[in-house]
Length: 236
Image (cartoon, rainbow, N blue to C red; front, side, top):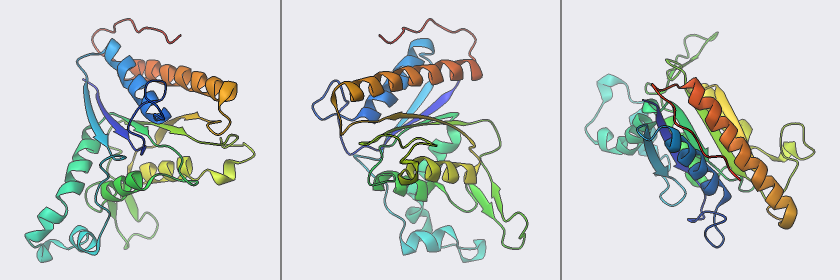
């Protein structure tokens, strides 16, 4: 059985095309998961909404607890790291991450950044060894294949790698760096652009993003095979 971690980070609660002012990223993550379930209804999906219910930001107490040596461990640290532990457990259990993360002011929404800060943790997802200057970081999630599908949306356009405004897009590079740091190096990306333009330009971008989302889902259905695959409806 394949486990999917479905995470939405948009501040918009609805889905574009269904709800007024709905989120394009929420529409696309839902489209991916719905397509997957059409083929594999028994696979597990863990859902986390960090846009509406963001994780607690890292605090001084969190840092003290996360980096405390074993001999200095105190009972209060368990409660301090409980949310981080839950988020990490969901991440570790997942084979596929479906991350709906819109571009806000050149980078990720604060709720998603708080999620990243909670799941990158010494001893849980990475081992940091300053005594080994040649290889100070050992990712712990490289133990088996995992794939992340980053689905984003942006008001402008031309922000893809090699595009004229790629230098303004710090979302994909930062997510790639963070996930590779803990051992998830396979990142597939989808993006809706032209939100500020609207009209036919936006419609064409949405259509292309839906088709790319389907293509990634279909490829991963083959990468993570089940005993039998069901037919999947095509987007029209």
